[in-house]
Length: 325
Ligand code: ASP
Image (cartoon, rainbow, N blue to C red; front, side):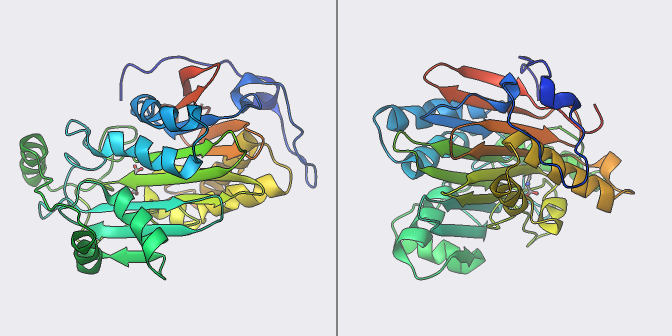
């Protein structure tokens, strides 16, 4: 990733050590975000354009769930983005397989995984949520459902992605590189002017993954979780490790206990670090959270994770703090 350097200096919470049984208190530190609504936050640099896509709905007092769907569709439609939607890097057999999920203010949720040939998996996930008795459809079943709902099938493997895949085939080395554009999901969380929360998460997953591999992004509770009483969280990075700690759900539950968003994300990062001591130096995971009152925060294992924030008073890219500095 490049061109994303608006560093928000560490505030009071940056140096806060949590003793056993003590809960972090809310701080005025800017990186916790001000209480505000509406507000939309998204992972990575591409979150800036996605937030811009979501904003007209929020500005018109629309529903957060409509805003997050519309917002991440901007990223899904960008053929130059190699980590989401069309143009996503394929699996090791050359297939672009997409994962996405969405969750609304009533805690309804919908998800698709291992979906092929459909450019907007987030909208298929929305249809699963709105039009079926299920939460998740995968693979061929998800594709058939999408076609029945009127989605057009198309080839999602762009010449650029195919070229990158052919280059990868010369080494066949599967080792996701930290912060390099082979695994940068868009996760988006929004609080609308009625005070309702929703979230969306969509990805082409880890580049060069095994055929059939599904990461955290379409898994409710791992890549995304929303509880309209408390807050919402989303994740990016090597999904296997987000799934192992039920990342997004854990963060929302910590917020329920009183953790501010950034501290909840930090705790989730530290859980991965503690449990996977041998692995964490070689993998990146970033978490992003938004509270019911509009405070936001993020944390990552390594430097380089950034996120975009848009509200009536803000439109910026922020570097998240990280465990390794
Ligand atoms: N979390 C996604 C996955 O593991 C990819 C990413 O965000 O980097 O599929």
